[in-house]
Image (spheres, rainbow, N blue to C red):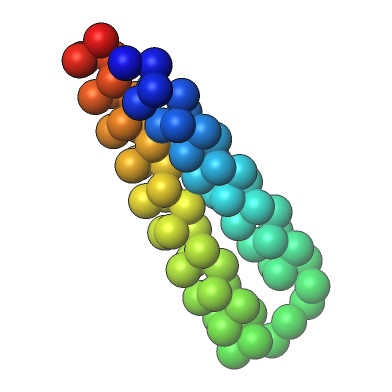
Length: 71
C-alpha cells in the first residue's frame, strides 16, 4: 500500500509547508506596523490559506493512516 502512503506523505508535507508560510507571513504582517484595519484584512487572507493548508495536511494524514492500516 505504499502507493497510498507516499502521496499522503507528500500532501502532508505540502500542508506543513503552507502552515509554515502562514506563520512567516503573520509575523511579517505584525512587524509591518500596519493600522488595525489593514492588519485585520491581511490576517484574514492568511487565515484562509492556513485553513486550506491544514485541510490538505489532514487529508494527507488520512491517506497515510489508511495505507498503513490496509498494508
